[in-house]
Amino acid sequence: GINAEYMGGESASITKPYKGIVDAFVRVPQEQGFASLWRGNMANVIRYFPTQALNFAFKDLYKSMFAAKKSDPFMKQLFANVASGGAAGATSLLVVYPLDFARTRLAVDVGTGADREFTGTFDCIKKTAAKSGWGKGGVYNGFTVSVTGIIFYRGAYFGLYDTANGTDLMKNAGFIQKFVVGYTVTVVAGILSYPLDTIRRRMMMVSGGENAGKYSSSLDCAKKIAAADGAGAFFKGAGSNVLRGLCGALVLVGFDYAKDYYVDWKYGTSQ
Figure 1 (cartoon, rainbow, N blue to C red):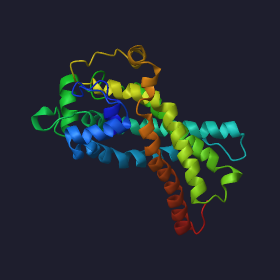
Figure 2: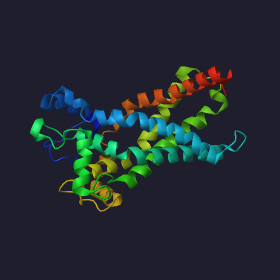
Figure 3: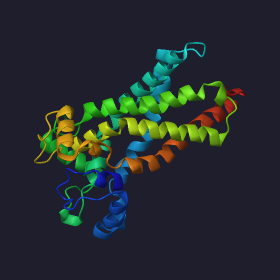
Figure 4: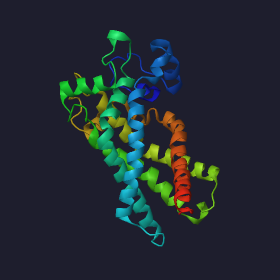
């Protein structure tokens, strides 16, 4: 919730802007209660498992479609890995986007009881769809820039890791080496896609409200953010993402170990 509240410049209920991640972490429990740090987390939990499952499932599907051999030139392998990762992310996003939308909106729905706009995940989706529909200005507002961002993020996330993992240097790498590579990849992917994530969140936060038509497009949103807050606003809250990247790195490395364990158990040798 901290990241969304810190960069949540569109929320009318946040009257005093946060000075930084630490300021947000201190003020949110004081003003809204300690439990508010987890506001919107149920939507996050519901979306997390299908998102990861779809990402990895579609990644292998798309990877077989792009089919790059280990003997192919490095750039061809990199393109295949980035393209398959990006396509997997975009496909899974189509399915879980309403939950992602609810998570973002609930994180900045401050207050208690009747002061809050929504009572929960599905109430958020239902009310927004009833008021502004599912498309532009509604639940899927910002979907186009989200797809672009997820292609950048998942493309770099899976593509760079798979490419690095396929080099001779990583053949006998242990957990620590793989974790360092995974964490570096996660941070780089996050920073590359963060400006698009900022635009996505801004567009989500006006969905279903009085300002639903504030941004005519993602490009219009980017222009207005830059004009009002400067270029630095696109990276507001990026610091917390760097810390969250630890979990992303564990997912990458953990999946590799789980896959090798399964192959050893099923076939007696890892590929």
